[in-house]
Amino acid sequence: MELADNEIKAAIALIDALGEADLDTYEDQYTAAVADLVRGKVEGAEVAPAGAPAPAAGKVVDLMEALEASLAQAKENRGQDATVHDIAPAKAKASADKAPAKKTTAKKTTAKKAAKKAPAKKTAARKRSA
Image 1 (tube, rainbow, N blue to C red):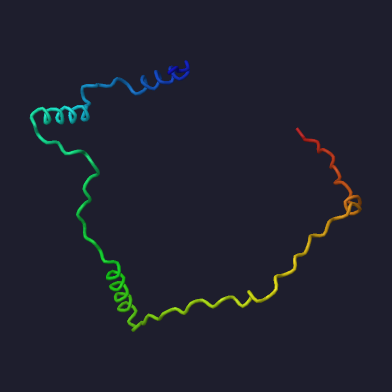
Image 2: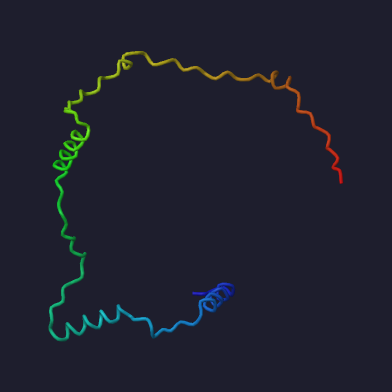
């Protein structure tokens, strides 16, 4: 991989701006995990393959039950006895029996109208006062 001179100069400027880094303060956790895995295999321990993390044990919510509870709470808040009614299916459009509308074409402008139109007048440049 080749780098342009300006990229190298920018990298050096960035490193100088950030200052010195003490590499001893950083810990390589990946290398430590691999070393533990190898050590476990050498000792004969059975190593489980890494997979997707187990799903968190959470409360399973019954959506219908939650909806009914929400409706009951809404009724209480309004102080009314609201009832739910079935909605009738939508009727078919009556316009389907009608003939389609006629298409009209746009009128073309004639060349005469364009010729009659005078060009815009130019205004004289104003003198600036100093």
